[in-house]
Amino acid sequence: MAIQTETAVRHIAGSYPYDSRGTDALSLRDNADEITERLSAELTDRVKSAGVHVIETRLTRLSYAPEIAQAMLRQQQASAVVGARQRIVEGAVGMVKLALERLKDDGVVDLDEERKAAMVSNLLVVLCSEQATQQVVNTGTLYS
Image (cartoon, rainbow, N blue to C red; front, side):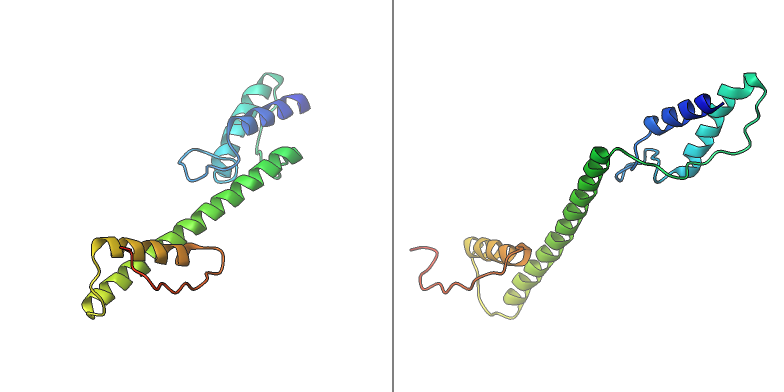
């Protein structure tokens, strides 16, 4: 019984990823009930010839080798960084768009396409940068 149980657990745990990473695929972390049902079915098939009836199975703890756990942690951290950067960029683009609209609507300055592009570039660098920005006083023009 112990060997069949361990074999079933290893087979089920090895058949599904720990985390679905935003996909609809079944994962050990996100779909515990479905995975547990599959474990019960597999274990029942393995031990029914011995006359054993499986009432319930549960995955209570998943442990990974340290190098796998470290790789999974790095992947989670990378996903968090990408998500945060995406939100920063979305916010920055909205702020740049608002700034251009306000400058145009208030008649503060009339920018040609090249100057708009330079302003957009500069604002995005300032808004998306992780480092503090330094002020630069421009005494020339874009065309000199």
